[in-house]
Image (cartoon, rainbow, N blue to C red; front, side, top):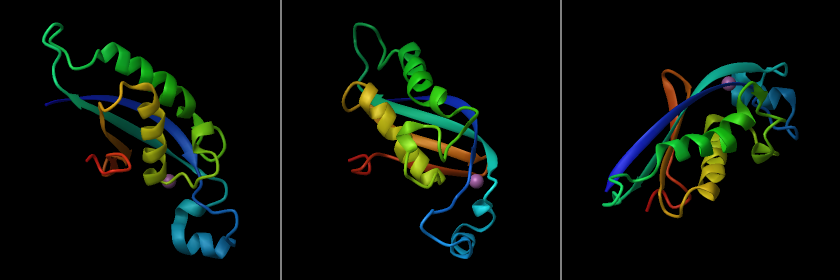
Length: 139
Ligand code: NI
């Protein structure tokens, strides 16, 4: 089994707040991130695909193709956007790093060959990242 990872970056704004909660409740749960005017992050996305190497090509998956899928399915939807209202795939969810990673996984899973998407790692800052291995935890 071989693992290949490709990285991409995007900048986006968000506010962490549930519309059905009061401002005090949101502030209590999400702290400064609940500030209604929003704030931004420079995100780094790492997408790992896994599988056997094709003996004919010597490749697991064409990285040009992975780059294109990440660009079209994710980066074009989120870069310089507001994660609360712009990307259709995040509609109706609070755009925490956890939820955004799950949403990105879904976007990529639909477009990649079955079974090769291993992990989505999303850095919200250089020190904080979340990993998502899919609904079955990568099993
Ligand atoms: Ni934030």
